[in-house]
Image (cartoon, rainbow, N blue to C red; front, side, top):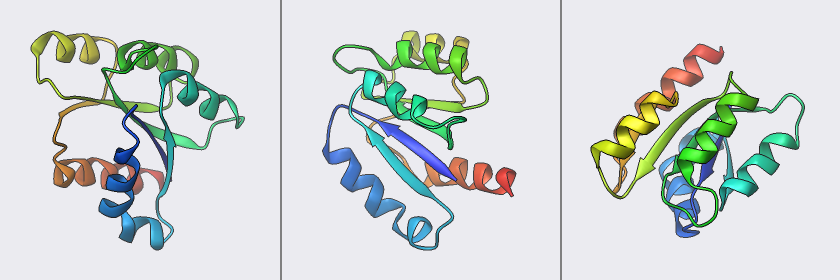
Length: 127
């Protein structure tokens, strides 16, 4: 199963690779990274159909915001599930994300135990 992590902070890649090392090493999970909303859409457009089944995106990014990306993913790739992350647990972003079809909403610092539960549910549903 392939997930795409979208965040303008490059150190997020190292963090995700550490936290999901076991799943990646065993071959049950493939991680892809994009550092902008535009780059994320390029990744999704590069495979037909996209192999990505889950997008995990920061909300606050320069250029295209995570909420804009969520809307584009949901309109072009409705089968892909999207969860949002924000440094701010504000209810306005939460409401917008959920109304736009987000599966989950996480706040930074990321609770990787909760995220792993979510990812493991997806892995099970793909079997």
